[in-house]
Image 1: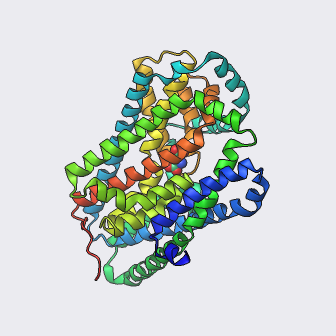
Image 2: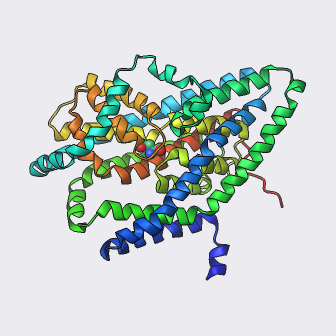
Image 3: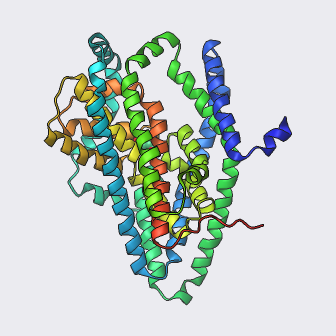
Amino acid sequence: MWKKWKSLPLWGKIVAGMVGGLIWGLVAVIFGWSDFNDNWIRPFGTIFLNMLRMIAIPLIFVSLVKGMSSLTDIGKLSRIGLKTLGFFMASTIIAITIGLLIVNIIRPGYAFPEAKRTEMQEQYARSVGEPESIVDQIETRSPLGIIVDIIPENVINAAGDNRNILQVIFFAILFGIAITLVPHEKVNTVRELFSGLNVIILKIVDLVMKFAPVGVFALLGSLVVDFTGDDVAESLDLFASLGLYVMTTILGFLVMIFLVYPTVLRMITPVRYRDFYRAISPAQMIAFSTSSSAATLPVSMEVVEQDLGVSKTISSFVLPLGTTINMDGTSIYHAVAAVFIAQVFGFDLTIAQQLTLVLTATLASIGAPGIPGGGIIMLVIILSSVGLPAEGLALVIALDRPLDMLRTVVNITGDCTASTVIAKTEGELVFPVKRPL
Ligand code: ASP
């Protein structure tokens, strides 16, 4: 048995961990073992998440500096930067449009029973408090606030908080640009130092990933326990009413994963979508179980470099940036959720309001942190931008987590697609990857 387990590839072990976690969660709920779960299982999930978070800042900093300093030509750097931003913008707008189209066609809000609606609004009104106070902060920002926030006042403080990842990226890019601008011989030691650090950090990622099967087991098991609570029947009732809304959102995700990304890959790169999904599946599974694209970053970087042949220069630039500002899944979710809430509350959104929605949803997906629940915080801003009641959040908050898991998968798939496409256009893609014999 142990021998069999050992010979399984990592993704196989992760799947086993996921399935085992789901089964364990159900067993724990049925037998009332949630205390045991809290004391003895949940901590392993936290340990795994913390290990991933722990490595995020050093990984981003070292790999960005390493990637950028290997660029000798500053023109190439700005070209890659522009291309990346262009790609991110385009894919976000496509995602929002898909979301708006399907939610306007399926109209899940009209399937919602009136009585249930009132009941749910009261039941969940309490959970709305916290995101609202965040909105107040964000709404009082000036229009250039997003840019101002990217420039750290103090680098050490910025690196001290994983929410400031954009600030760390900014400093790392500046650092990398400076390395390419000074005479080579003066900074050779620094370049070598970063190459060495890079190898060490990748090894740490490798070691952390060995713990992934246990981590996802604990994460998913605890999620089932939290979700179903004490009363399995009541939660089931609630989920049934929201089913159509969930299906609509998932349909949007599927269109993105099975239609949009494969088409783009096919048009621009030699990578077939099956090879692509096989390569990035470990990252998708981690995204699914952690609900955090930031936590998945180390794995996304590893898979695109090692299995898709994207160069370090491209992956270390596109992926950390994508993790923070490119969230296609979150964009689809925002569009569907906002219109769903409008439908439930009987608001008819005009074309102008839907356009405002596109704009705010784009900015919101840029601003949303790559952490669990990052998207729902931003949803409040979107709702207020089109004049929808923030209480609408109460309707969708109950089902946020499973959708969060799925949108995180879409988010990182979009980032991996972007890095593959940009690598191809820059001549930085070696696919199929040649493995040493
Ligand atoms: N959890 C998502 C992510 O990390 C963000 C979101 O909540 O939409 O990509």
